[in-house]
Length: 318
Image 1 (tube, rainbow, N blue to C red):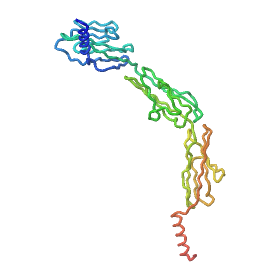
Image 2 (cartoon, rainbow, N blue to C red):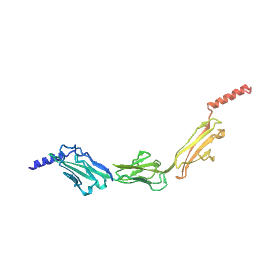
Image 3 (tube, rainbow, N blue to C red):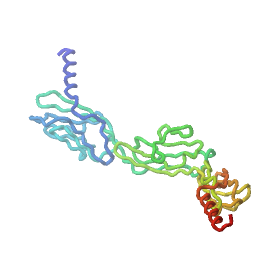
Image 4 (cartoon, helix red, strand yellow):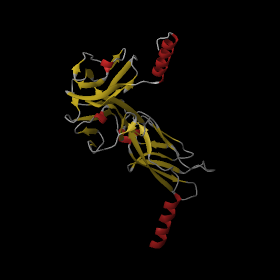
């Protein structure tokens, strides 16, 4: 047989093996089981030979009898009719290339290859962070995602949304660590790290406290009210920890030290500037805002005046 005929025969052998194994790779867990299925149907006449090799070493050959490599004894079961192989009690060292070779009765040799990846189950996941009091724009920190098992991917979330690099947030090359330099109020919240591999996954959570503020201080309440009315002013600010509040009226201390200022009855003496100061005892910052309260005569006020005039007329006073 000349070289051309040999190359043709080799090509026929190669082509005859295409598609006998499903596309890989296969995934398995340590101590688990994996089954290498085939696309073959049991033939009318049994295969003359079915053999599997791992990394070039024969692990089982079945002809009239089965010959099993000692390291795989009691761990494998061969389906002689289809060539399928079951491998049990997986270990990490079982990862690699497996080759199936089949010799049909009266046909060409068929061969297929596939890859098995064995992973250790992820059994523990935790987010670690240096113990420190973090203050906005003054402190820096990092979060490290640690886990036991075979880790294929790490995915970071913050407050339920994917976390992406930004001007002050960066990641290590393996996505294991998130760096925040310096921290910002937007970094405050709950962080999650999901570690996974094809056979298992686990999610760890960590609450990161960034002390900031007070920001966005404001007073809600009317800027004008009728004489005699009850007026409530509410002071708010974005702050961690929550801000402390104090009030001044026309530049004078009021000794009101909470977020709400109540004027039980608006009088002429109550008209003026109400100033709220929010302070943060951790960041040592404070912020203030002012609301000018004036008197007005609304519809109820005019109704009251009309009733008063009517009463005076009836009494003959006017």
